Image (cartoon, rainbow, N blue to C red; front, side):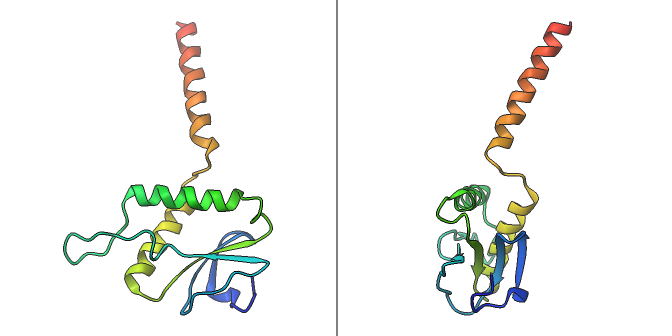
Length: 129
């Protein structure tokens, strides 16, 4: 992930694949690295003087977008870098997004498997009675 940016300043979320960084300038994509930001896309609409966190619908959109990038054939050999600016509010919201992604297992197959497992357990219990 070097490509002119220090790897030491980026946090690795998925080994050799997904990073989070705070950068002063908008980076350019390279042959080995794809940079993306949500600073201007997922924006919190404040009620007063608050700045977040973003709502669950925005978290869902982020997870969907990130999963799409991770599974994309054209990006399969690239490192993905979610970058944000030094603006404290945008930085905090971006950190919440990638942090929530990291602690949740949001693969598309997991919910389907859970439902199927639940159905099979329920059917098993009905037959056992």
